[in-house]
Image (cartoon, rainbow, N blue to C red; front, top):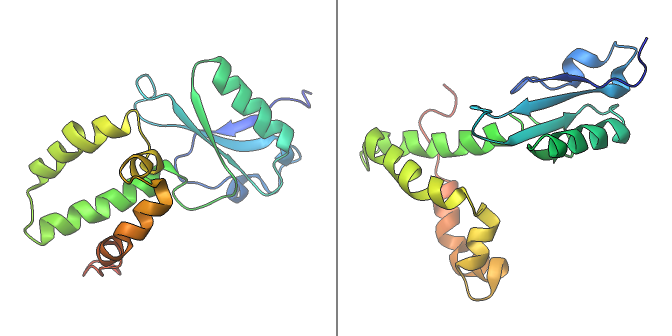
Length: 161
């Protein structure tokens, strides 16, 4: 048998520890989740189980780089991985804005597809806030913490449903 092959799932949410614990090759098991549509979006999330070897993660990251993908490595398992968690946060706020009568779903889609999405195609959130305050990220946090806190801590009526 092959004792060097990496065993990878493309799951978008199932943590590798949930299906690899009993496997003999568990140190070579991980998730390599391509983001849809993979022909247009090069990000691949690499998620390790607690027993996945560093060598398996490094090999998978290197392979993804070599084939033109943009791998991101999660340091630990988390529900939704990285991309879905960011998407869930945006979706929660989008639903809240519609529910509160602030904007239509169509206008929210436009704000993302013609606004934030274009910005995010070349600047991440930390790069953006670093650029938006003269003193960088810390200055941004100092200037806007109160307003940001009011927005992100607002409770929704759909939290438990």
